Length: 203
Image (cartoon, rainbow, N blue to C red; front, side):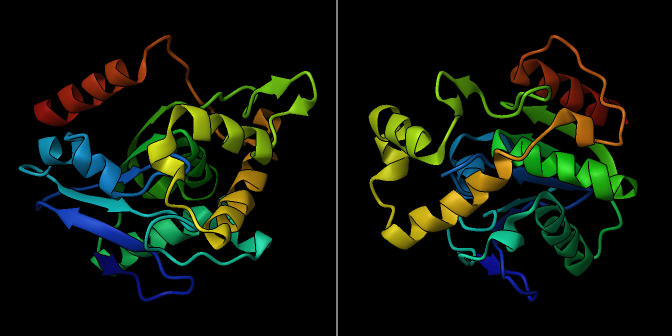
């Protein structure tokens, strides 16, 4: 694992050479999830693929300071990776909370992006509503423990509190706050990736 030099530090895995693709994982996951699912190795023969552990995840720092987890700060941490690696622009692939972080890049650093593929995030409503209101972290964790124990079994109490800070920022999402124009298509995440792959291949 590699580490950024800034504070807070992010860890990341990196493979391949060429134009930069940054892959942003979902909540409770880490950068290695893109390695494990084979997507990174698909791109790495032609691109420099970087898969960071987002703040509060994996081997990145896990501060319990809420303001560090804002969408703008998360986006800035990704831009700092680009700067350290010497890239002016990157292609971004974001899933779930990684898509939320990628929206922060669109909000604040759109000039640094070549393309963006987002999946697993409700652009209109953010986190789902429940009969008790917007989905809470405790409700999310209860569901995650029952459906994806491989993501929760190794979490320490400190890990959970860091994840809670991240989750609290997800709850603040509102489509009305975005200044960019986002074109929606009724594609699944896989179809969107296929379009990106075709676009990159033909360039």
